[in-house]
Amino acid sequence: MSTVTGAPRGARSAELFDRARRVLVGGVNSPVRAMRGIGRDPLFIDRAEGAHVWDADGNRYVDFLASWGPAITGHADPVVIGALREALARGTSYGAPTEREVRFAEVVTGAFPSIERLRMTSSGSEAVMGAVRLARAATGREAIVKAEGGYHGAIDGLLAQAGSGATTLGVPTSPGVTAGATAATRLVPYNDLAAAEAALDGAAAIIIEPVAGNMGVVPPAPGYLAGLRAACDRTGALLILDEVITGFRVARGGAQERFGVQADLTCLGKVIGGGLPVGAFGGRADVMAELAPEGPCYQAGTLSGNPLATAAGLAVLARLAAPGTYERLDEAGARLEEVIRGSGAPVTINRVGSMLTAFLTDTEVTDYAGATACDTDLYAAIARGLLARGVYPPPSQFEAWFVSTVHGEAEFDATARALAGALEEAGA
Image (cartoon, rainbow, N blue to C red; front, side, top):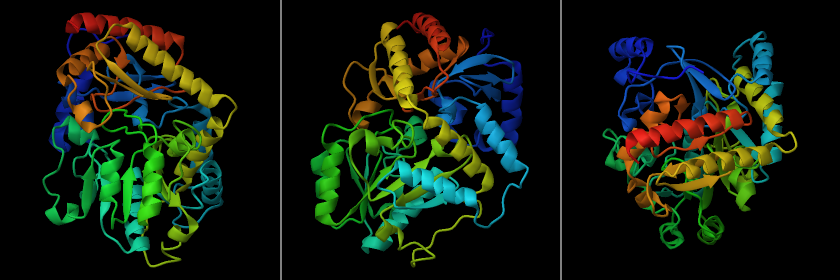
């Protein structure tokens, strides 16, 4: 297996990055891709297959980024590729309803009992935007409660104490977001039920990642999600669960199945697109009836439910329906955890199923404050060392590692060897 050696970036990636900076802002189309959080320039990826990606210089990496989660059955899954080829031959977009959209919605609603009606979008951010607007329309209230460190897309009103790339770059709130945009946003610590209960008075909704994934993986404390459900029932606020990461990832019915809670509105993305841009939101029929064309709350999208996204999504969701799939994913997640723990790295590992974060700290991480207290410099050094040895981790302490159905012992053994070398090099 070819691995990266010598210079911190290959000649071809260096050339592409120099070209990219002349025409793309920062040389990338999403900030965290710039790899500034780990103190290096980005690798440019040429292709991907199974559990691996190859950069533009021909170096192969065991991939734990998984396109930030969607590649749950591996890259270039032959079943997904076949479905895309068939769909592509029939046209890429019609701007009109299709049978495949109906089938897709039937699969999603069949997996999530809380989703009685669905609306597709082209991204998770759009799904969140639609769900928040709908919650305000359905309740006649304006305030939205969110957790500190919760990231729900690049939406003005929710870019307050946001996680994900905003945390990586040290920009918890973004210039250009007006005071008015966030005036109706109420911030509470993640896993602090009492704070959420107080903030929900008069609010339209609380939007929460049922398993935080954008401050790093932080599971819900026992009783937290059930407590939010009860508090919403008591105050008349809606419970919006942002399952863009966890939906079809931690269980077929997402975190709602895994933790036994039901949302009023659910946001989905990533896995449901099979690697293509897609999102969806849905929920109670009476709430969704407020959405146009049935109701007055407007939401639309030219490419929503397009033939390619629905074809890829249906193929992946069918693959995930095979018996034992989620048991195998959980086992792979546990194996990765075992590899990291066995390395002797000074970490606290939070894992839910096939997603985890190795926090560089010796204390428990249960909220945003705990996540941001980690040793990000050490994480950066270890991440650079892993990349130099053919393993691709998230280029940020505040993101999740993902395994797929095709990660096996060869990949975990290679990761163990790479991690040993990276730790020695970092002096950890």
